Image (cartoon, rainbow over all chains, first blue to last red; front, side, top):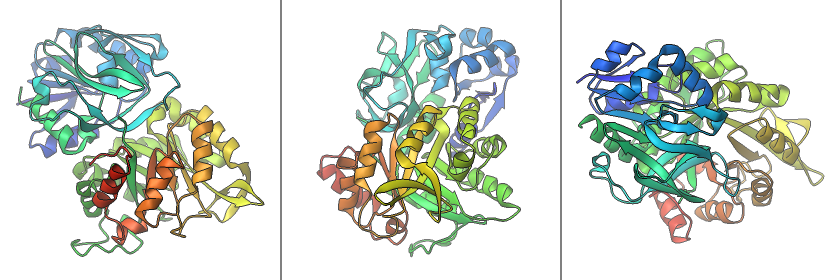
Length: 193
Length: 251
């Protein structure tokens, strides 16, 4: 199986590579369009700021490629947010795969949210073998509100999308690669799709 | 519900764990990777590695260690100790660190916080503040609490937040090493005046101290070293007690 982690200059991708290795698979980092298109599984990571990450995607032409992929694609954290219609962070237009606008937490809660929260209302094979209310690790200031593509929820001041799915596209706001055994199981479920 | 975090802190010198550790089941008590694995399996929510070495090779040794930890450990970890530039942080994050913590370098050059946040994002920049009370006023100190500065804790903490730091790790030098509990009054004030997460450090001696720092101190996370290293408190039993006290934790 060929697993590609999209390497467009954003984020801590080493951790994702290591997590995949712990599951017994190898992943390659690439920004090569044909290599990404030929992969069996594509992981779209991202840590940092939305508008500058989006600029890197635009510069590499990957903004056109990602929405046309047919194999399972998993966006993580900012990767998931960039797959949405837009983000309030830096007034960024996203890839428009998920039909939802990413907004900032208001200051009734501490921002960023950092730490372990629980996922509920799990509605996807991504969560096979995962119990309701398991803890996963998140660190973020912006969130995708609940929508028809929500496949897991989280509560932080309000209920929001912990994960999204549309067709072959999946996105998690949390970091499966940093969410202990629960996260590794979710990552494994994705790799076995 | 967001859980309160329990964070063991490991002191590192030349790539090895210092401070005696009391793990009989460890093959190599000085191996930070092995110790990190044990803490992670026991339920630690995060780890902090504090590098106290002062050698020329320090940067490379630390980057190697970060790489080895990231390879094996599936929970987030922070690296601190002598980090003073954008390049330092870049190397550590690229080797797999989730967050870095800066302390003296931020006091000496506050603009560094802005520069790091602009390049890497708030989420991975922790500012550590050491302070102790002098004539009833909390004063920021450097060099492990030895050197007082002109800065006052609450003003500095506010500035750190405004400059974009994602979290504050506050160590009370008055409490550190006493095992009499955390500086909950100052912690609660930080939490009410700021809107970023606060990690409590210094003073952990028993399980009740952790409970108190989450309730009275309103801390988002609690960090400790020796009570975990010497197995005076097991992380799992600590979390069960916290849960029994109605504090949200990951068990």
